[in-house]
Image (cartoon, rainbow, N blue to C red; front, side, top):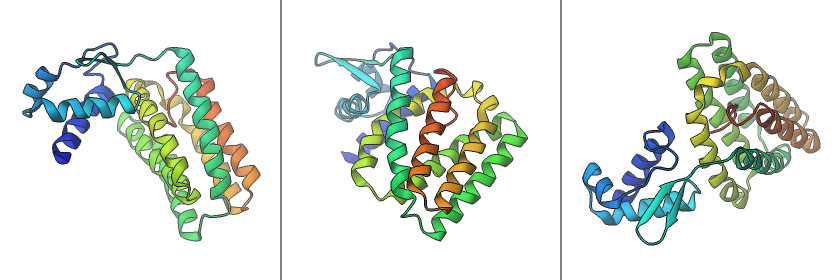
Length: 217
């Protein structure tokens, strides 16, 4: 059953991210089960997981709807992520080993190349590299509970990234600058500087508005 639930969850998450299941769309178990070739039980469990991630709202026992996000809610998400990832950077500053630092440098270099190229494909590649960059910092922080706290925030921001991907290219160079400053703070092993740079990085993305999601995974 776990395999089937994971398969359905991945399929529904992908459809939500791509906008195929738009905000406000109802998730009907019977229809989804037929479309995905499964029974209603894994669909029901997958919807529960999506609700736990904050992507779906449930109404009673049988009704579920893809969540809509107001501008205020999006701003709140940026602020929350800024605080959490700032803490991650603070911890990572004294815990990242030379190998992890080299990984961050390599990822930053690849993102700079994507920003310079400026095509749609390179923008999509940038988003993937950015995801790996932030994950490497989170891994370096060695904070299991922090990772669990960030998961629902990142899931929602990933949804927003996919919805507004076409707007992000103008912000890539700024993001690259922040990445270089973060790496410098890590090289100095300065927790205060690393935390401050990460918070600036996250809030800078927020200041461009809900459609500015270049740093979202």
